[in-house]
Length: 397
Image 1: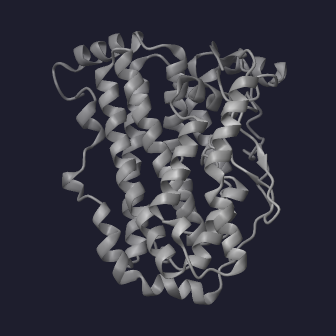
Image 2 (image 1 turned 90 degrees about the vertical axis):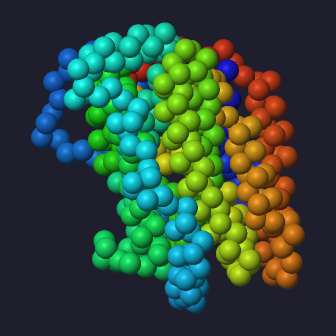
């Protein structure tokens, strides 16, 4: 089953809250047009004169909402960031590289290594490849994520080569993350199990569309987003690796586990930044956390489009949840962990408005778990639809 997770929790003291990580396909929806139009898509003649325009409109954006005195906080934390954030980066010479896990094209045994990879991949089911492709596409939209980091007031890389700790982190984090998409992309290409051209079009659509995190150029908001996101992807890649091992592809399991380890290290950096902000500016930090929960923390590839299925992201997300790669339970666990890590319940001296935000955030996890149980009870029979990424073979949502 895939769990429908788009509830709205109403509080008397704050605006309605919804959470959706990742958004889940409604099994009763998915118009014939949005699904069947994928069939034969490669034979259609495209209008090459039509510009690439994002398929979905972003929210009306609030920008530069952080006052000057908050910007100064990040300037004052540069020395702290150098000692406490940059330590979570690894020297290039100590880092793994995609080639460490792939057949060596310069060796005499290259063809045999590729045959072995393809033999292992042959035993892996189609729904798993849908999940793996979606993860790879999300990783490949890295240019967007670096762009978002460079919108932040107080921490952006103003020159593209700035030596502030915040700028160094942004570039080096991007460089480490860049290996993830490279590795998964090459593995999928060599596997022979997917339609690479249609995947590549999805990547181009996604980078062109960008993302809509609604973080207002504020490090408070975005570092909450990245704390959740990095922990989420660590869990998802780890579960993807365990499934690969269960299907007999030990090398793919190693790949996914290695990527998960990177995400875990990056999570440690972002959660440490927010831990510091909760320590020195708890009013702003707790309000930012409530604000992001209220807006929804959405997977960064939520504007995904494959050229034929308008609901490709929610369909992919449904498969991910059904396989147990990332579920509503995981989201509840992530939120519970971060609220505990940042000691949100223990904050004192807050303004009245911030105390309401504190109560609101601390009460979310049990509500999410209750909604998860109700949604499981109401789950309907899943649709089975074609995915362009696997040559229109059908997969159960």
